[in-house]
Length: 233
Image 1: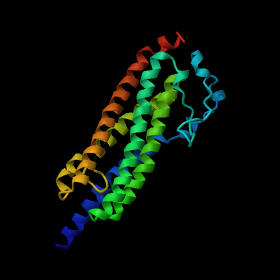
Image 2: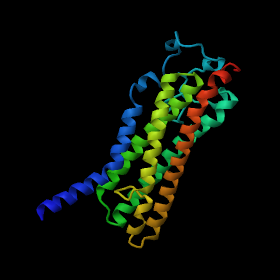
Image 3: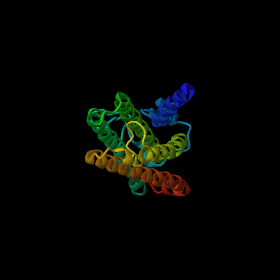
Image 4: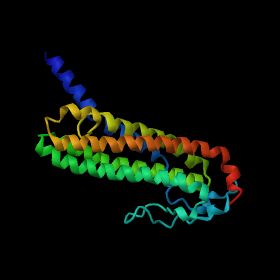
């Protein structure tokens, strides 16, 4: 009986930490050599294949996100055929930030009201730090990788964006810990607020999952005509 109890506790602990582990894996994958991406001097591009004129963007003019100013971002500097695609990258990042913020606030409210574990708050804080950072890195890799163009950054985006899409899917479905996925609808103890929270958060995560998949597909397809379109700018 003691073994079954320990096994049950171990299984619950593994379930509660699953999303946090997945998010950390995304961050570790995207942050690999990230110092070569964010703020990379233009001089380091010497020796690469000649880029189109819009590669003269001043990447060390850090202006985004507002206040933090970690990267350079300006849609007006892009050719028209890249604007819509990059705007999708940015939108996915913005949804991630907003949803993590909503999730953190809801967790602060729910922990005392439904006698939730303090671990929920810890998990939510980890998500609010790791997921937006990972999303920003993927967004920037795709944006700059296509604008340069830079095959190394494009490769990071092609790996990172589908991985984030998978994480967003899990966050929209799982009922574990602070994660208010759709599967948690049967565990609200009749709380109307909690039900609304679940529908709101899961809807945002699943919507972001769909957007991330769209970004991945469009990013892959852009390679087929990037060389031709680059010659026009």
